[in-house]
Length: 156
Image (cartoon, rainbow, N blue to C red; front, top):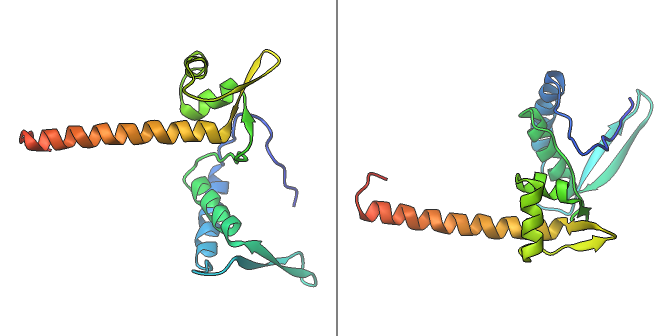
């Protein structure tokens, strides 16, 4: 079996057959998740005469199950190392905003960045920290609106 890693910035959606296989695989693997322990043993079978058992960190095993579950739902999955530096377009795509809007956030100091020549680079962790911050602010505002609506008997 040949495995290739997609290097393009545009993730590939799984085919229907891949989604179906991912669903079955994630369910089978999830049945073997151990509640405790630092690793999970997996037995790989190459053919009738060759097999090997390997230890996989529990975190990686759970991540594999999550990846398969997302594929089963028809979602493309991209892994980004936490210390990766992103282009402004990649960062904008993650936040689901336009590149010019993201550049404005960078220039205003809302998100840290560095310049490589004339290009801006954004650390993935800084981008996620910003996203978590604005998501928390949105939740707080929504909670306040719901409380106010309930106080005024608006049917919420």
